[in-house]
Image (cartoon, rainbow, N blue to C red):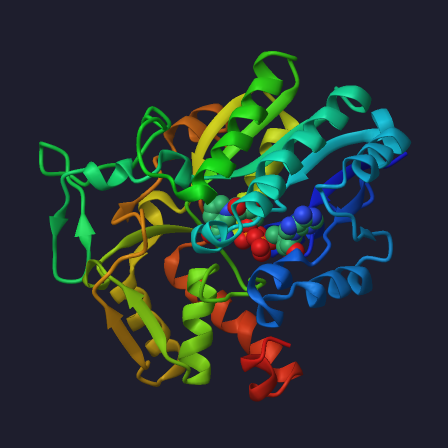
Amino acid sequence: MPKTIIITGSAGLIGAEASRYFSSDDYEVIGIDNDMRSRFFGEEASTKWAARQLEEEFPKYQHKEIDIRDQNAIDQLFAERGLDIQGVIHTAAQPSHDWAAKEPITDFSVNATGTLNLLESLRKHSPEAAFIFTSTNKVYGDRPNLLELKEEDTRFELYREDGSLDPGIDEGMSVDQTKHSLFGVSKLSADLLVQEYGRYFGLNTVCFRGGCLTGGGHSGTELHGFLSYLMKCAMTGNEYRIFGYQGKQVRDNIHSSDLVRAFGAFMEKPKCGAVYNIGGGRRSNCSMREAIRACELRTGKQMKTVYLDENRIGDHIWYISNLARFRRDYPEWEVTVLIDEIFDTVYQGLENRLRKVSEMDLRQGK
Ligand SMILES: NC(=O)c1ccc[n+]([C@@H]2O[C@H](COP(=O)([O-])OP(=O)(O)OC[C@H]3O[C@@H](n4cnc5c(N)ncnc54)[C@H](O)[C@@H]3O)[C@@H](O)[C@H]2O)c1
């Protein structure tokens, strides 16, 4: 009898990758996604196409347009499946700082209360299941900006006292008394709830505090999905706006397939209330300037960019995840898709969609 996996945000970048990964003879995947991404960012960012694709590719995949804020609908689903549920992968979210500031109550109700709805139903009906939450490095607020960075030609960089490259930010960084943005606060609230349902109730819960998550399946838009949106601008000739830091801000980038393999590793050997920083780490990162160059190399065209002096509020200048804790607990896992291959897959993913719709349609997000 196949076990059930519930994946929220199943049409989004990470949710769709997870739905593909777990759709097999062993698991029956129930995906929850109400295309709220198009309400956040407009039609350009709709993930409806990805839900349709999953239904076509995997006849056993079941899609439910439930809103995770709908506590009754969530509870009913968990009550129906009960102990058959082996895992919950919770990726549905309002993912943007700037959008959160426009509608703080909606942001909090999706990110924090939506997570609480899922945890409560898990506790009541499926207490043996693993609960995997895609948290974010924004739980550390802008504290990473206090690091003593060195400015180089194309990026900021962090070194240890002995002159070697710093291995990145670990889970010991304080989450307190820094500027988070309202998005950071709603995600941190959810992160703490996920930890507490592990520590207090003994459930198998984990927070993966992600750096930049990316891949060919992202519906990128200016407010979210940086590499995908950047590549889309490079391909369509649309203008890209760089916000501050001379374009030298650094991000580590993890491909959705590597992240989902980390979920698989946790599911095999779950823990209570675990917290891991996860990202491309030292093996896979780039600055904005380096990313623009990489996009231009793929398209063969110079990008139209405009530089704005003012950085986004609370935006990290340099963030590379230290992966040591996760590698210690799950040594079989490693980052396998490195930054060049990530650019290739993002380019390829957009080109495949371009082939299906005209270039004009892509600009409008169809
Ligand atoms: N992409 C990144 O760089 C990044 C970085 C760190 C953390 N994260 C976190 O990882 C998770 C997945 O990110 P992603 O890039 O796949 O996001 P995404 O926006 O591509 O996918 C999220 C999906 O959730 C759905 N959704 C939103 N609100 C919903 C609701 N109320 N009910 C049901 N469905 C809803 C959206 O329609 C969308 O399809 C999010 O929790 C995000 O905060 C993302």
